[in-house]
Structure formats: C-alpha cells, structure tokens
Length: 239
Image (cartoon, rainbow, N blue to C red; front, side, top):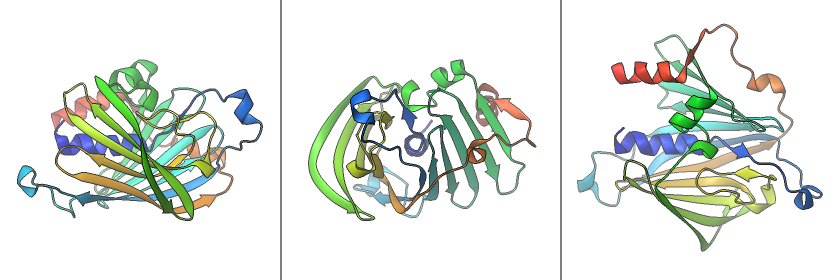
C-alpha cells in the first residue's frame, strides 16, 4: 500500500475499539458509554507541499461510532463514493464489514480469527516494529468535554514512520477500552491526528448522543452472501 492508503487505513482502524476484561476496583463506579459519536475527517495540514501530491480537499470523510455493552460499529462515508460499515465484538475478536459503493452491489466481508491476526483487523491484532507512547501537556475542549493529549510515534512493519495523536475525554471513560497503539487511555478519544510523513489527517467528533443502542444495529446483513477477508484482499489486488 502507498502512504496515502496507509494513512487512511490507520484512521479507519482507529474507529474500531476493542475491550479488555474490566478491572474489578474500577468497575464499581464506572458505567460503559452507550451511544453514538459522529466524527468528520479531513486532510488538515500539509507541511511541505513538495513532498506530496495530496491536497487539503483530497479527503472528506464522515463516520459514526456506535457502542453498546456487546459490540462496536463504525459507519464511514468516504467522498460520498463508498460507505464502510465495520463491526467488532467487545468480548471477542470477531470482525465483519460491509462495503457499499455508489455504483456497485454491496459486499459483505467476514474475517476468521486467523485472518484477523494476519491482516491486523482489530487493535489487539495490529503490530508495529517500534512504538513510543508519550503523555503530552495539552488540554482541549471538544463538545464540552475536557480532553487530554497523548502521542504515539510508530514505525510500521513496512518501515513507514507514523505519528498518531489522540485527544481523549476522561469523563467518558469505559473500563477496559483500548485505542489502537495507545492501549487504555481511560477515556474515549474525541479527536485523532494521523501524520504519515507527508500530511496530517484529522478526525474530530462533531456530535455525542448517549443512548441505548439495540443489538439489531450490529447484526450482519441477511441478504448479502459473505466472502472471506482473504478473498476480498485478492479482489483488491486484481483491480
């Protein structure tokens, strides 16, 4: 994959939370967040335009993150051309996604446990050759929530240097919540910056709607024949 694709994939993966077993001492006064968070993503900064052909308007992406006590689901609209819906289990490593192209029939991709590890489809399965987590002195208010800053400097298995910045809200804490590459931030991230050496993609929450999300929101489509993730990757490589 090229750098542009990797930056976008990293951002998409940031929308897939994974949960560890809750700590007994913290669970007493903690309630899991149930609801929907809406984000908008844009190429926000290009420090050196000579190093890339990207432009500020090259990415226009919106996604919603649905959370209940059992599942997490992200629904992302990219350039009004493609909608990607991803569902992961909270208590297991299950993963499936639905891709709906504007001019094509929708596609359902279901991954096995082996494929999840091979293709690094969940935060727990993602790998990097090297990473360094830094807590930064910075505060930012997003939608009325006071957020703290944490930075992850990372070198991928393809030797690509990436910097991730998460602004998370401690008052929206979920026991056991893990953000990709950061681990447990003790809060839900409401903004992400992804720097891939050429430009920065920023995703920022624009709406928080705390409510009960029914289990039907996370069900697989019944009218689409599923394919494996390995088959999906082969199809992408052939295009």
